[in-house]
Image (cartoon, rainbow over all chains, first blue to last red; front, side, top):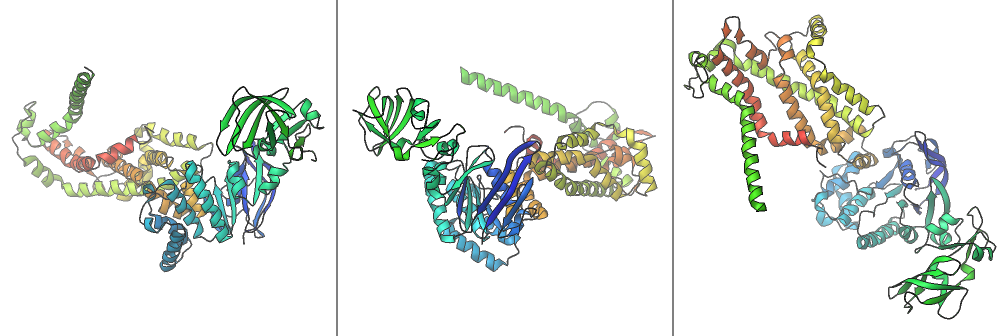
Length: 334
Length: 274
C-alpha cells in the first residue's frame, strides 16, 4: 500500500516561504510526477514527503498513518537521488545490501535479495565493483536497486535522469516506466523536463512558486490547461500565446494555439506570415514565422514542408484546439 | 627558447627549495650530530664532524630511564588523540551537516582559544589539577592535551566533512540508518583520509607539547618533553647529553612523520584547491 496524503502542507526557511499551502492526494500504485521550473518547490515537496525536511505546517499521511513527525527511516519510503548518492567506499553488492543490513535482516536473506535485485537491473556482473568503476546508467541502476530491496510503500525520485546524456535518459526513462508496471508501487517523480512528465506519469502535478497550478493526467493538462502557466509549460514546442486583436476576436484577453494545431498553406489562411527560420527534420518541419499584426509564431508540421527563409505562408488555427484565457490568465470555456 | 627557460626555472626552484629545507632542518641535524660528540667536543665550538661516540646516549639512559618517558609520551599522544576524535567527530558532523547561523561563530570562538597565551591560565589550571588530584597523572594530562588541541581537530574534521556530499548521508537516513550508524558506516569510512591526517597532526602536536607537560607532571606522567628539560640543570648545560636526550625525544615522531608525510601534506592542504 502506498497512499500518500498531504493536507495544508507548508514550508518556510526563515522568513522565506517556499510552499505556502498544498493539498494533494496520491493514490496507491500511481506514478505521479511533480513538474515545474527551477525553484518552484518540487524537490522541497518531495523532501517533505521523504522526511528529509520538516514541515512548517500541515500533515503528511502514508496509508492513513500520520508521518509528519516521523524520521525518514520509519516512513517505509525509498529515494533515488539526482546524484545517485551511492556509498563510494562500498561495493555494488554492499550498497544494495545496506538498507537490509540497517533493517537487521540475516545474511542469507540479504544475499538472496541483493542477487534478485541485481538480476532485475542487469547488475549481476558488477556486484563486486565500486561506484567509481561504473558508468552513469549503471550507477543509476544501483541506486534504484538499493531502493527496490527495501520493498517500500512508495519510491521517490528526485530528478534521477538529469545527470545522464540524452540517449541514456531515454533508455532509463523506459526502464523506470517498466519497473513501475512490474512492481505496481506508488512512485513520486520530480523533474523539470515536461517530456519526462508527459511520457511517464499517470498524474502530473504542475508546480509554480510553491503552489499547485493543476493536477491531472498528461492528456488532461495537454488538452485543457487551467491557466496560462500550465498551457505554456506543457507541450513541446511551447504553446503560442497571442494577445490583442486576434485574441479579442475570440472573446479573450489571450489565445493560445499549439504549434502542431496550426495548418500551413502557401496560398490562403487566417494569418499571413513571413518565414524566419525553417528547421527540416524529415519527420517534422518546425517553422518560426513573423505573423502580420501578431508577432512570432512557432509552427510544427508533419513531414517535409518546402519553405525557406523569407517565404510567405498562411496559418489557420484549428478552432477546436484554440485555448482562450481571461485577463487573470485563467482558461475560459472552449 | 621557451623550453630552456622552463628547465632553468626548475633548477633554480629546486636549488632554492633544498637551501630552504636545509636551513629549516639544520638545527635538528646539528642536534643529532652533537649527540654523537663527547661533552668536551660539544663545547669546543661549531663542528660538523662528530667523533661518533655513544657515551651521551648511555649516560642519558642510565641517568633518567628513557623508556618510561617514551611510554608516557606514547600514552599521552595516542590517548589524547583518540579522546579528541571521540568528541570532535560528532561535533564536526553537527557543524557540517546541521549548521545554524551561529555555527561559524562557534568555530571561530573555539579557534580563538588557541590564540590565548597558555600562561594566562596556568594558575587556575594548576589549582584545578591539584585540588582534583590530577597533578602528575596520565589521565589528567591526556584530558588536558585533548582539550588544548580539540579546536584544531574539530576545525580540520569540519573542513573534511563539508567536502562529503550531504545527499549521501540523506541516502543513509532513507536506508534506515540511525545517527550513529550514519557516522560509523558512512561518514567515518568516507572521511578516513581526513581523519587519518587529523590523527597524525594531533599526535605530533601532543607529542611536542611542552608547556603543560612540564608544569603538570613530575615523575609518574612525565613525557619526553619533561625528559629533555631535566637536562638543563643548575650545574649547567651538558650539550652532548642534551642533544642526545633531544634526539631520543624527536626520533620517534620524525620517523612517523617521514612515513606519513603524504597523508600529512594532504591533510594540511585539503580544500585549498578545488
